[in-house]
Length: 429
Image 1 (cartoon, helix red, strand yellow):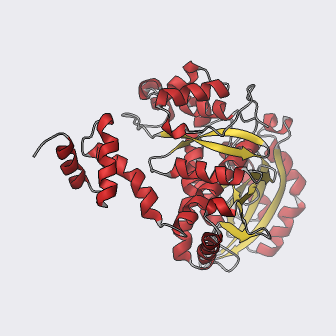
Image 2 (image 1 turned 180 degrees about the vertical axis):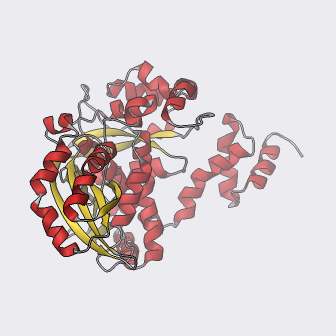
Image 3 (image 1 turned 45 degrees about the vertical axis):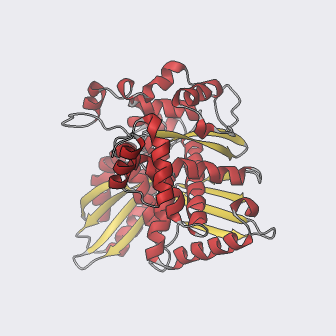
């Protein structure tokens, strides 16, 4: 449940036609953001050089990424206005449109497992790997207690190590014994906590296992920290029975063919990565976990999502992914734009944030596959891309719509053609 004190209605008619100031005013009206909060979305008032210099090494500047707000989302009965940081045209519009299609049939429903992250401790030169595995499992309580001593604050709020597992991994060099710590990290992403624990217990694990330690670090394959989302998309709003059937065929190819799956999953990540970035979370960790999750039981890279037709002829979309995001620590707490994004969402927990991210991923995926199954990607996407082309050619704000209309009518969305059109509009030869 959102902590926003105001009631949000994410169904904002014609939001795309508002100017930037009007969009900001509407977001301030509906959320707990103040005018001062939302001002950080101005390049001059966002992340400062001094702040950036404290975040990473050798700082020389910052880079701006457009932040759009997706509308129409109802998730577990609550409406959200969702910030997405992305440079790609059509992503925000497509996700908003898919959310509108799902809205009348209940919106998005999300659930999740506990926020368990894992750390790995790799032992080498173990002479009796099978027996070492058993010895380590016998020492479960000791290992858990030793690890939890490293973070009493996490334990005090219900987190900490909940279990261990031990795997034997053969290789051409040796047989490795790998111990996993299963750590409930609560509302953190968890990398720092699990890494600290792994380093603290490594020597004792080596002593019990009878080998020596090489690696002691988290895994980004966060398959014990899963978030699930489902939604029903109205067949008529999608485009009718033929588009629905074509969409099912397209989705099925992504399940069977890695070449289609790669682009299909990229569409999912267009939405997911944009919200992860907007909220100051680790895009690389999330992307690594998602793509590793795409490898199926047969070892084939496959679709992350599934689409089916229900008894009413509507599309049912589902998505289940690792989603290691947090509200405490990292850039989420120090980046002013990320802080504004979290306040806009009004989320209470990392679990709630993960559900929002998955809903956007599913919405973006449905929108992309729908376009592919009907008009083709270029018509809609390139129409939006034409605005970038017009701006690149030097069109001023008052000229962009006219240039875009000509580029689309001429079916020639290229900079050199935009320059020619702009010259004609300005009365040149």
